[in-house]
Length: 78
Image 1 (tube, rainbow, N blue to C red):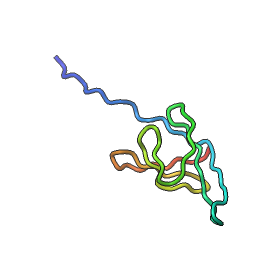
Image 2 (image 1 turned 90 degrees about the vertical axis):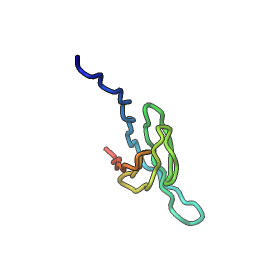
Image 3 (image 1 turned 180 degrees about the vertical axis):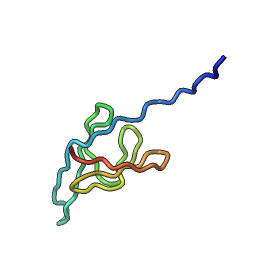
Image 4 (image 1 turned 45 degrees about the vertical axis):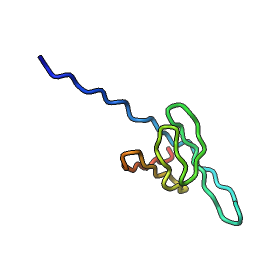
């Protein structure tokens, strides 16, 4: 009889929809617009996504996030 395969939950579905820029105290602050498993969220560097990943960096062309295991991923604009 084959051994049962352990259940692995699906990876979060993350998609970068856009980047917004605004001026705060004389400095440009970038905000990422991310679709996180169907939820649209507006996040800045240091924020946590609903799926548990942390936003490391927001740049004009993409966003770097890190999951709970410490694995980083770059989301880029389409």
